[in-house]
Image (tube, rainbow, N blue to C red):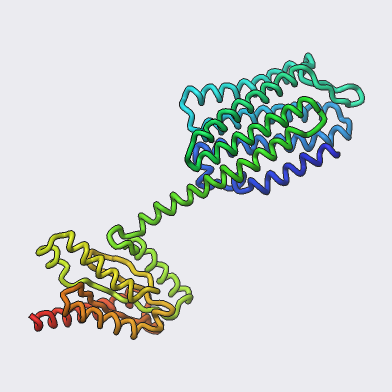
Length: 392
């Protein structure tokens, strides 16, 4: 039972550390590297179970059942090597030639174990049991284990060399794989020397823990960062850097959902429109027009700094006023309009704004609030145009 305790502990730790990879198919697990690593983890799981069960069955001294479990034990060991080589090939993005060579070595190790186990039914070249259930290791077992030692050492040397040459974050990944390979090589060697000690299980546990910490987690962080970057591009207006119409549509839908479910009771919508953008484009060029849009956006964001601002058209913006900006809406609108009127006199960007409050008793959703704000914005736009004409 002492022997089995290591296997049981390994299973528990293995599941805790790798639960997300084993039981949830995240974006990482959909990649070629992720799939290869997941298969490797399942092979390791099978090995742990057979290893833990072996100690229990040895205590019970049921030779036929112990023999069957020992066969599974060696097959699972071969699978861990096979899927390890496939994972390394996928992770390092080796060319087809080296991928085939590494995969071929993995298949050779697994095939050798499978063939030796078949032969072992007739001639005990791998192992056998004495009448009192004493386990005796044979020559083929040692040969296969030493082949594994050589394989893991070669992989470790290669990945450590890559880590030394690389100046990118991937060097940490290669270093982790190289160290885990050296750990596996050492503990497989010890397993060969001490057949009744669970060194192989300890090696798998240490190696997978290192890979999970320094490779898998890091890969997921990198994927999350890439996904966030893509999301930012999809929801960010490239000219002004505020949220675009896609983000606006989603936010509007969320507001409608909050209204339907009674999660929101007060908010305001401010609708903005840049005056004379067409004139600026026609007389000064589109670069000046882009600068005009950016200046208008800066003015909006500067005054309504606590509200989400969206560019919903070429010269149109909208802002949702909540919390502090909602409570201070009258002061903010007055400040905004005063600045716009000063800009009108100085020939700077002029922005019309209309604001409307959500009325729970009358408004079924966001669109009614927006429509009222839009009407008020156009009234303000006419007023500002008349002022410009009077000044001229």
